[in-house]
Image (cartoon, rainbow, N blue to C red; front, side, top):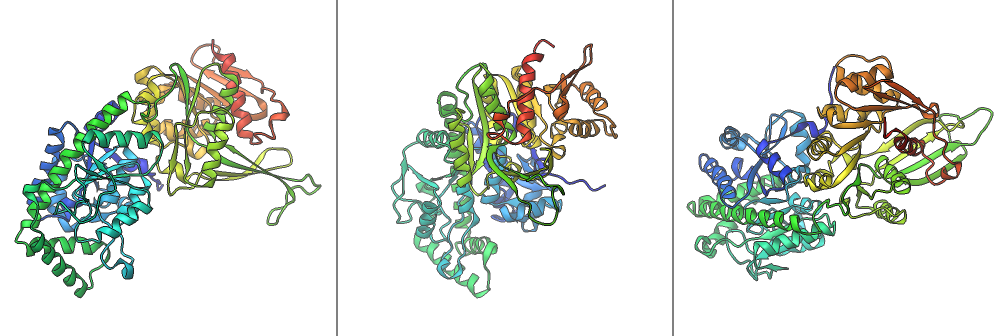
Length: 605
């Protein structure tokens, strides 16, 4: 049988990097295009090792990023660095448009600046060092040629440290585009924006920071405001290594002319021009490239260290909960659209429009649970959720404020739609079919928050839904075990329910609330064989380490399954006032409110 792999299954984080991220220690990402496409062998391998050593020497953990064997590798071993260096031009260049194709084909590729930013966002790395970013190409008013690096910077909260924009590009136009895209541009200790090989471009810098600590404070403030856009830190190359302007500009002009004559465009133009510039300058440009990359790596490591220090002492720290011993709910916020046809003799007619009722409200498993807890719990409740950078997302945040839920941990994701759920219910009120768009949550939006252990460290309870990706759920489970947090899992749907099983951390789950179909699906995945009944499924999950399984059965109530006698206890459905239905018409909400009320009755069981 063919198995479909989701993106979180295709990410491999080196243990050293994962441990540093989990512990809140500084990590610096490094791209791999500079290894495969930026320099010849063996200079490229020597440069890759040198950059990692520089990051370590300045107090951070290096994480060179590439796609190898169909896996997005975050942090490479020495033999993997050598593979990148020796394969060189045979390696695909991996940007956003290429990532899925290279991974799905099991291929190898070197990540560009844009591709590396995506990896940083997925893994929670906040600082990334490179030589120079791409930008608007010369003559873009005719060719519309612009690097994907700029848009990717605007989509993420990553800090990219570079020697400005590659000098073969149109620097003034690039700065204009960065301003339009909302990317913060900061030059370190200089009035002018640098031009890669040269310290000055003739363009005044939009903002100046006098130290790495000042940059870290800017990053911390950006995170606290949930701006969800990147920061470009431009670092002028040290004066003693600066290239000679006249000779370099002549080489650049000659290389660009040659590219035009040979019809070279798109992703191929930058490596072509850079290689020609290195050739025409007698290797001087290549040596300068190594020096500026080394300087950028050192600066990035110091910024990452300062940022970690800011995060540990600032209220703007990502994911910081406001009250100890509270409840943190992590998962989806969704626009719910509820439809029900009018009661007629023939019932609902397929293939045509049916007159009926359409209601809209904001829901989502995590949001609904947090709302219910806000009504019935004496403990403070915090919601960690994500919405798109769209009108629905803005309305979703406003709705949270309206019902008294905190919004400091709502993640805004540029370029994504807020999740939406459309359900068609029959005249009896039971759901017949539903369609849901949760592509936002497929992007792994919670990584950056969950990497900070303080999200769960100060909580007594954590409730998580299956809209999180497997790697995100694994982080939650591991941290709950580490900090003694009682974890409750809501499987959400049959297709998503097995995500917690796939973490290998079922022993972290204190309470699980599947319906009858979900418990069978999870148990089948856990046991590796077909499970026939809900109670058999509960037994499998209990044997795998889950403390208690509550099988919700709609109007029939719920069955508590546990390891001690009596092993099964049936609870009738909790009666919920019909006055709540116009507010939260989705049956999902009533089911979850019921189990939360039930938990209050089960505390001694």
